[in-house]
Length: 321
Image (cartoon, rainbow, N blue to C red; front, side, top):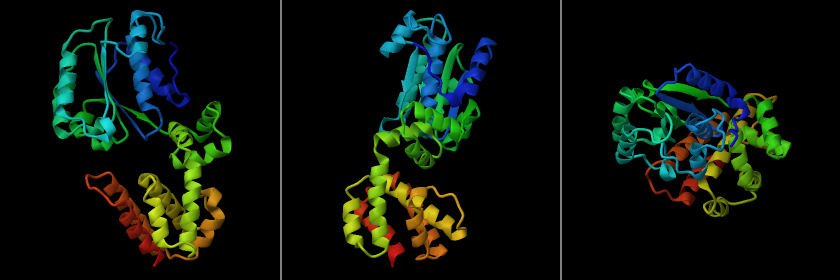
């Protein structure tokens, strides 16, 4: 079982392995950065390297490695946010109980909490005692895309390990090894804010086909070839989050084109159509549309039950009137 560290994670890996070798590994790590750079994968790989009985690269043959491969190592506990829901206090109480037991095999007990920012306030408070008074050879690894959404009391008790998006050349080279079409990869990397693993998800979702279809409808709506009712009826059957994502990227490009003609666009393959649309709208209306899209995305992640068609009509009508 050879550990597969992603090319842009080498410095973080070497840093932690050096600390481990020097017996200076902190009791709590907080892995943070944009989605799609492999933070959870890194956490799991590092946990495996610590739990392996024979090698920091995971030998694949020892008892620990075989248990890890089977997914039932008794000294590794991984907590997930189910469907983006809050991680509640009862879950964290189970973590505290797990910490208090001695390791079954080897030296370490490791807890990985993915989407740690999803802990509600009671859960975060329940974790504090463990963070403040860690047991020997217990390592907590918290993973988050939203560092500032974690309470300061939690952040301050962890060693923060940042994961930035890799250099574009590094990302494209890696995506080529994953057999992603290089022209598609360059475009999708812009949508993914430079996060290569997110590009892989986009390829699996056939994002470009979806995007091309709704851009054609968006363009025809704005030039008067389609009605608002027909577009909203069609789009309310689709993934609303993806539609808002693409609408936002298009309006950002329209705002950029208003500011300067010679500008790098996110949607560079739609440059001709976007330049024509720029002439139809003043900058204030575009900024208002952008603000409305951001508000709509916030509502989408909130507790309200939304009517997709009404939301889309409310957004688009302010742009076309």
